[in-house]
Length: 292
Image (cartoon, rainbow, N blue to C red; front, side, top):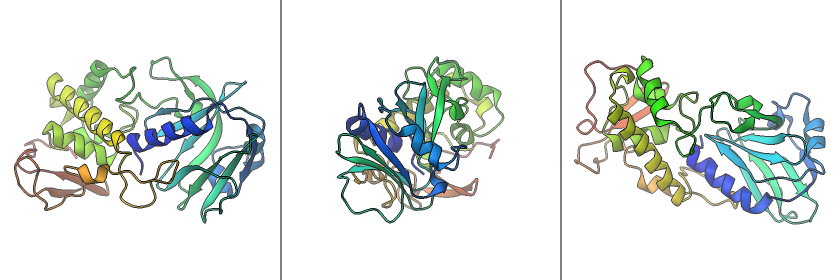
């Protein structure tokens, strides 16, 4: 699933291609793509026609495009395979095209393509977030925490929240109400950089260790942004259909039995929440009192 860097790459592409343009029409080709827009596909399309798209925003793994006039935005979640693509309007329709937005200037259109249909689009009201940053966000994600690349992210509040929880550090990093945008890949990468095991109890962490994890998460996601995110297959691409290249720079995730880039020990893979965790047995020793 795309994490913060991949979604930010898409947001930047949309900013270039859609900001300030007026939608002429929206066509919903599969109702599941707008299943969370409770008023239905026709209402979704009608709410977009004639509206000007403003500069897109993002929080964690969610992005949205504010609309002119009424405090609303098109909220997008890419799910496992969702893609927002721009291109010439007369190009061939993609096999898994779900929604198409045409613009009044006749230029590049915007398409939502989703093979597995786990992603979705909806029009939602913009409201103040519930986490105290003062930002306006779509109402369905009002509870989502600030992400580590936001200026509003509060490192001290993050540390205090960690200490209150009785869980492992990786579970905490995946908790979108605590810190948004971090998924399985970047959690493993940040913990490798911070030299902490994924099952380290959060209530035993020091302020310095919490700061180290946060700094590592910020660094690894910034590095991923520089090369367009992480692509393991063709299901994550930017708005031009291009893959990211950070997969080549991963230090832990997906490197089972390969040598640790620091000490040479074989990277280990553990079962974790029906997924996997990758770590170095030497650089990231398992804590005596682990939480899973």
